[in-house]
Image 1 (tube, helix red, strand yellow):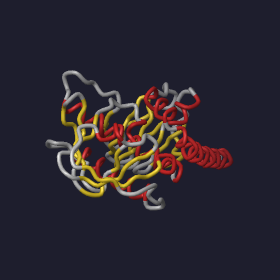
Image 2 (tube, rainbow, N blue to C red; image 1 turned 90 degrees about the vertical axis):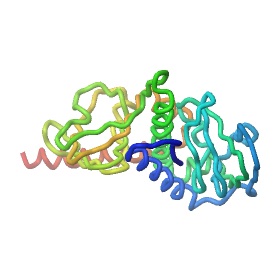
Image 3 (cartoon, rainbow, N blue to C red; image 1 turned 30 degrees about the horizontal axis):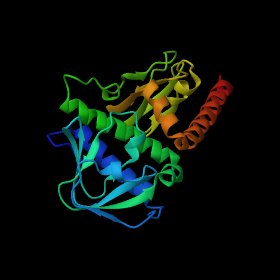
Image 4 (spheres, one colour; image 1 turned 45 degrees about the horizontal axis):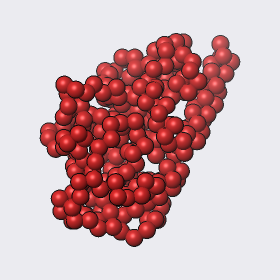
Length: 257
């Protein structure tokens, strides 16, 4: 997966992470059917079942939105999962022979819900960044990549919860009342709990090193969860574990005091 023009390092890293997540999602699964070959198409997914996603095994695909070339895809890329993303929908096509391997969408989403959610957030950011570069005058992305220097605050305790974040690179500290209560590591999703509960932020998140994050507006995150409810379980389990860890650390701090 790559853009048809020069791209930033973070977009390149995002595409690489999508490729890694594709392998991690599909490795435990078996294809849902025989491989499919096509020689030419301007709207490939229109003729394919909506309950399946497809691994590109051979050839090259292009992805267009409104007739504009947005991305190119090479073997190892997954297509079709973004049908359930809150992004502007385009069309996949090919001008030469391709081979696709099918996987059941529901199995991809439920085998590892947390990885499926991570893939979805990365994909939403990637496609929006690609579209923004092609249609800058017409398109203002509401999900985007943000950079923070060490010591800068990403989330402020007590603030309204308007975004969900994924830490793409770097490390951050979770702080409550000025006391460190946890770590946020690369590839971790954070800030979702307050969005789910509609409460204000319970803690601050401060960059411990230079960080790059992907920010998704709460409305788009809600759309994503509604479109892909299978991924909720993994996220809720991860948040429950974080809350348990946070409560334990707070009790330990109170005992010391």
